[in-house]
Image: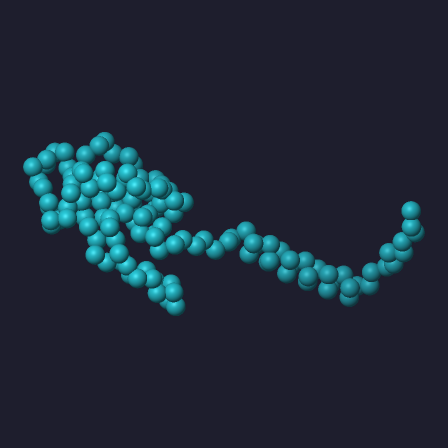
Length: 132
């Protein structure tokens, strides 16, 4: 075993050391809050799923197209298809135009939809109403 001389710390050294400690704490806080990044596709899919729950399972906004502008971090969505179904008003067909497939449109969307982390975040907390 080696004999190590740790020496004495001068007061100035201790202050400098404590300044470095607060910098380390700041860096540590920054590490705890990572940036969350989602792809434009994940945003569109999550928005579609959100629209279903936000309308009490009566409407679904899907087949969304859009353009992502990276410079301003903005996703501009366009050309949606809106499907509508309400079991109490079963006779209403194509409420939102010729692309409105009603309940069949819901089924087509959910057959291919995989919930992402963003999807689960935006639909969390919605009261699950009885089926429309």
